[in-house]
Length: 119
Image (tube, rainbow, N blue to C red; front, top):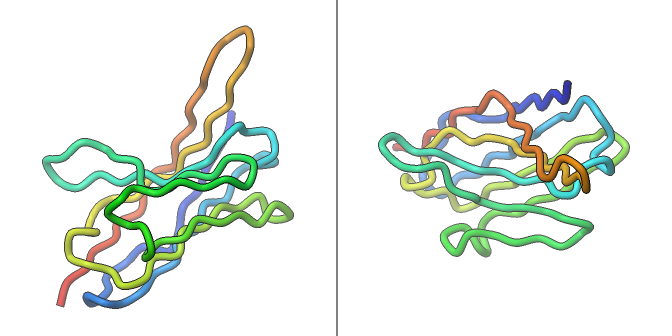
């Protein structure tokens, strides 16, 4: 079973930075895509950033502030978050997607890490 373990969340002041890490139990090359989602209280889970074969995409709300990257040797995906705003407060989840010709897409999730932006 695929395991994704997130770390790096916490409390930060507006304008500050955090780096989230997601360590996978398997080679990240085995996944078709990896990404970060977030869910704020009372809101739906939303895509923040994703990476697929080196191509990245970001939610409009985080473009220019967040950067997704990978360390293939460590099977780890990162989310560097700069210029944080109170509206970035949410639980952040790591996601890995594998697409099988036979079984279709399978999504794997981490346990989530809390990010709170507040003065």
